[in-house]
Image (cartoon, rainbow, N blue to C red; front, side, top):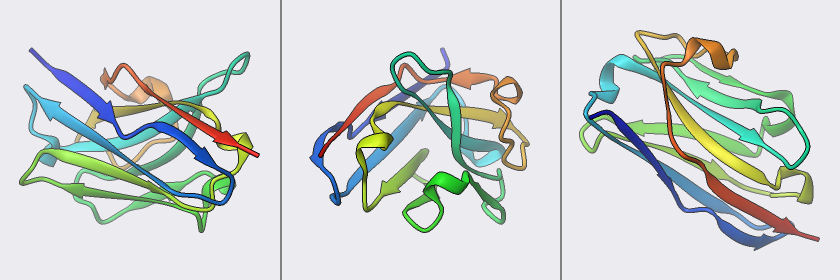
Length: 124
């Protein structure tokens, strides 16, 4: 059974940091591009950042460039999202997603597997 499980969400003050993790079971992340998306209340799900299956390419939404980074640990079958300088507008449910042999797409439709999401709340 394929499963992606996010963890690390929580409440943080503006300017703070959080590190999200996405752990996979039932699929080898080493052959999957991994993306992070987020959805704020009343808004559509939006792309945050992604890393290609090889790790050689990363794509960032303009809103998070310079603040968020993505990394992967294929040995542990996990992907991390480091979020720094968080702002209230970063408040959302964050989802990780997997795209086999992907290069890091910004399109949610390209991802085959999704986690259940983890809540990130940034207070002002």
